Image 1 (cartoon, rainbow, N blue to C red):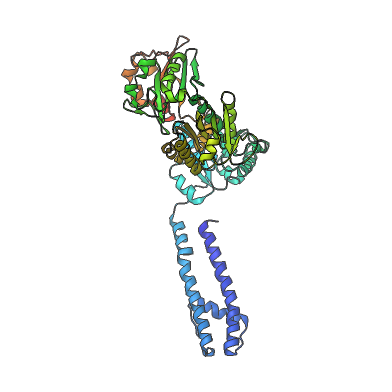
Image 2 (image 1 turned 135 degrees about the horizontal axis):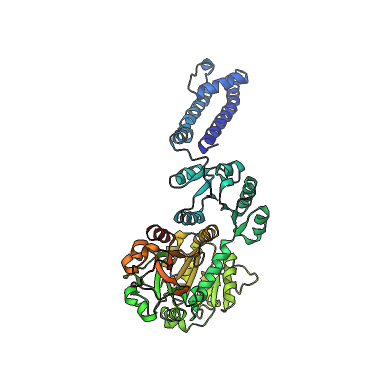
Length: 540
C-alpha cells in the first residue's frame, strides 16, 4: 500500500469513527435539550446528512432551544472541517501519486550486482561499478526514493527482505548480492537471498563485528566490517604521519614502490606549487596524484599548491621515496616524540589503537571507564586533552561516533596544541570538508571506506588501500607502440599516470615524458576508476 492510499484509509476510518461517536452526541442532545427521543440509526443519518452537506431538514422542526442550535452549529462546522481536511491530506496526495512516475517493479538483467538498499556507502559502490561498466540493480523499499533513483540507475521498488522482490531483481541470475542495511535487516536479506539461489554470492555488511557469525550462518559468503577497516586505515595513516620512516608502501617490483605522503605544515614542500617543489629533480620520485582536502586530482596541475592538508601519491625506488618523505616533514614534528592520542574507543578506535600499538606509545581517551582506556573524559575539553598529554603528543586520532562532536574535538585540539597533527574519522562524506576546515590534516569517511571495501570485494581490483580512490592496473597498449608518453598525451587524455613499464621481464621505474613505449610493453598505470576506463577506451 502506498503512502497516499494509506492516508485515504486512515482518513475514511477517522471520519467514520467521528460520525459514529457524534450520532450518540446527537441522540443525547435531542433528548436533553428538546425532550425528544430518536433511535440511533435516525441520529446517525442526521449526522451523515450534516457532514456531507446534503441537507439539514429532517429534524429541523424539533430544534427549538439555543443549546440545540449551538450543538448543530458544532456538527456542521465539524463536517465542513473534514471536507477541507480531505483536500491536503487525501485528495492532493492521490492526484500527485496518479501523476507521478511509478517506480520499476522488476529488472531483466544477468551478471549484475543486486544492492539492497541505497545508502551513502552504496553511493560510493555505485560509482565504482559504473566506472568499471559493471551492471547493477538497486532494491529500494521507499517508493519516492526509488522513483528518484530510477532516473539514473536500474532500480526495483520493493522490500529487500521479501523473496519475491529479490526474484524481481533477477537475483538468481546476478553475479553477487550486497546486503547494505542495518545488521538485523541484512541478516534477513541474506536468508531471503539464499532462498532465491544457493549459488548466489552474497556479501553482507555489518556494523557490529560480534554479529558477523550470525550473517555467515544465515548464508553470507563474505562479511565486511567497514568500521574495523576504517580503524586500521586511520591507524596506519597515523603511524606514517608521525614517523620519520617511509612506512607502508605498495611494491610494484623489486625497485619500484608507490606510497602516500602527507605534506606537513612548515615542511620544505609546504605552500609551494607542484612545479615549484621540483620533486622529480630533487628526489627522482614521480608524483602521480594528490588529495587536496579530500578531493583527488590526478595528475595534479603544475600550479596546484601543496598545503598542509595535501596528501601526495608518489612512485619511485625506496631511497627516492625516503628522501621525499624527509621533505614532507616539518622540523617541529621531527622533534615531537610523545604518544599518539586516540579519542574514542569504539570499534574504529580499538582497531586504530591496535594498529598503532605495535610501533607507537598510545593513549586512549573515552567517556566510559572500560578496558583499554587510559584517560576517562570528554575529548572536547581542555582538561581531558591535557591529562592525555596533548602538549607532547605527536598526533591525535579522533574516532568519535558523531561527526558534529568530531568537528568540535578537532577545534579543541588545534586550540590547545596547534602543532599536533589531527587525523579524523567521519561518518558521512559531506563532513570531510568541514573537518579539514576545523584543522584536521587527514580525514577518512566511513561511507567512502565501506563503499570502496565492497567494490574491492566485488571487482577484485588492485588498489592501494580500500579507502583509496586509485587503482594500479597492468595493461598492454599496442596503440602507443613507438610513441613517447608526451607525444601520446597520456595524462592529458586519460588522467592516468604511467608509473612503470614491464619490459623483457624487468620492471622499469625510470619513466618520464620522453619514454618510448614498445608494442609488447606492459604498462603499470595509476588513476581513478574513471581515468583507467578512459585509458582502456582510448589507448589500449
